[in-house]
Image 1 (cartoon, rainbow, N blue to C red):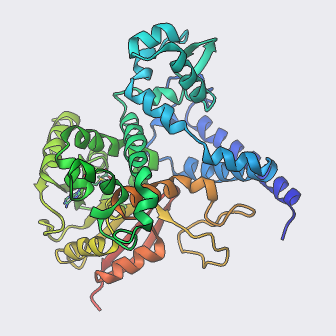
Image 2 (image 1 turned 180 degrees about the vertical axis):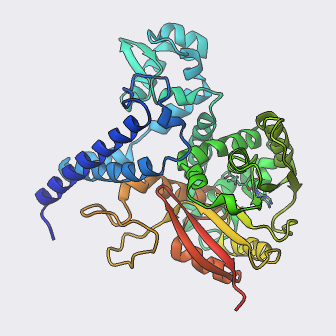
Image 3 (image 1 turned 120 degrees about the vertical axis):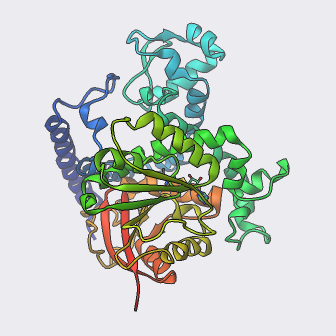
Length: 444
Ligand SMILES: C[S@@+](CC[C@H](N)C(=O)[O-])C[C@H]1O[C@@H](n2cnc3c(N)ncnc32)[C@H](O)[C@@H]1O
């Protein structure tokens, strides 16, 4: 085993190498990396294919966090993790539309003016913003004067990232209060029912029974924001990178199962105009999808898109497609439901059809685990799963447990799930933050 000092030197090398490679990525896209005080996006921020940068940042985030955990007094590291209240400040920032109120002025606003616009006491507002600014969200340009910066500008209410932040800072914290009770009480601790999640338990006093998606249907405002947030989640996961790595030009027909408003299939439609696309989702969402496509897709792109309102647990009314694409769906459902959905798809697949599951894919920390074909191995001394470089996937796994009683899965778990539905694993695509798992129909 190497000493702590050896690890520190190896981590410093990884940090220098990955930071230098990240700088080069920005420069290759037309200009140097912007300072944190800049609000105009860099061209790389708007790129769909961010795979190379994501792989570099996976190493950088892992190495920086491991370096601090190695060198800082353990008491400060553990308390930093236990007392993190970034989410509280972000919840206020989004709900009060602070980024909108600050706008683009580099001079910023004093909290007394800002407080009267957003309806918050200036003294309290100043402390909230100073905590966030200490994490590089907003800049304090003068005492009690704040302006937007490279991170806070993403909280503008028109940006779907702000909807995602709002969902993440409201739903999971509500469930968190009921979590320990949920995983220890006899009625719920062994339950795999999505209706028994900590979130559903937390709202039972409101008299509601059902799943999270049933609850959304009776809360149309949240449902609408949730659909908007899914576009933000796609950006966070960098999942449009797959548009540049999978051979889409060979795909004539694609069914986006549980499409949402089409945060994946609309960009696909813009790049591959010959592909016929079918969207399947619940009725309200399909209506939102129709409106979204009408607004976003230029009328001179002549194509046929089919919108189908259906419950994917009843049937998949779209046969023989080249690709059944399923993004961020499996993680919402416990194994029995996820397997049923895959069985429904299998029953309409042709022999040439493929399923692409696009999700976060978890990895254990076992250093002896066999290398998965298609997955890059973390360089030592990083944790075998890239540690903090993949922490978003573990946070999302916890959110799935809290809200849906469901989970993100390892590749082995996905392969087993596919086999339970009569599918054959073909390939794993390592997309840095996410992975794509390709299946065909097993006809053995
Ligand atoms: C987490 S969102 C993912 C949306 C989209 N695939 C994306 O990546 O942006 C899950 C989607 O599954 C849909 N959904 C949930 N239950 C469904 C059901 N029983 N039948 C069809 N769609 C369903 C929801 O309405 C929602 O749009």
